[in-house]
Amino acid sequence: MKATVLAVAVLVASTQAFTFIAPMQARSVGRSSALRMADVVDTLAELQGPVLYWGSFGVSLGHEENDIKGYDNFTKFSKALADTGVAKELKSGGPYTIFAPTDNAVDDFQGELTAAIVKNHIHEGKLTLNGITDDVTTMSGKLTYGRRFRKTFLDEAKVGIISEGASCGQTYPADVAADNGIIHAINAVLEC
Ligand SMILES: *[C@@H]1O[C@H](CO)[C@@H](O)[C@H](O)[C@H]1NC(C)=O
Image (tube, rainbow, N blue to C red; front, side, top):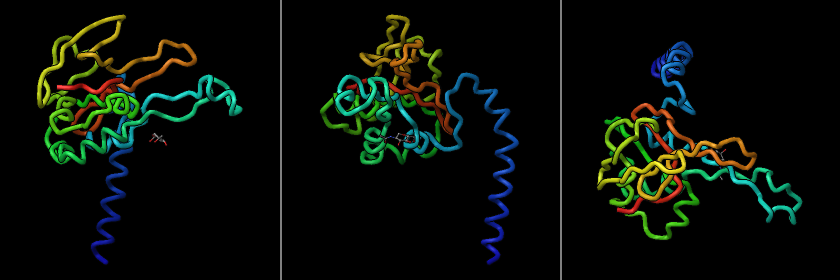
């Protein structure tokens, strides 16, 4: 009983602390697309990816081409993090930078997401999207930096694509802040 009362008290206290702190943190992270109080693993599991539109296929089903069909989330890469045991490492320590392929990117890859490949998506340290200006070392290799069409590339993957206003443009989230790191969506699996 005492424990319950204490837990409630802690919960109330931490909720109040959060309410108080959140506006200051929101300012300090600047362009960050989301503020979450969770580690990188849990943040990624909850993250909404680029929007998927019905496209011309949807018209025969009664949709407009630019009706939203769903979101290309990070469920498959999150599962690979868990299955390979890499998620456990990321639950503590940090900061980490995760380059997270969307579910469609994992489908395109077709191969198996081994621990080595999963670790090739993780940099030990914090890199904002604008802070990526050179090759990036990962937990299992190195990614080659490129800048093409005013976009940041690592190997063949585009990092954090910001829509340029077209109604069907896609936005891949970047600079998503977590307690112990930062996440950028990418559109291809990074082989090593
Ligand atoms: C994608 O993530 C969002 C936010 O968590 C969720 O609302 C949505 O249902 C997810 N979509 C799919 C297809 O999993």
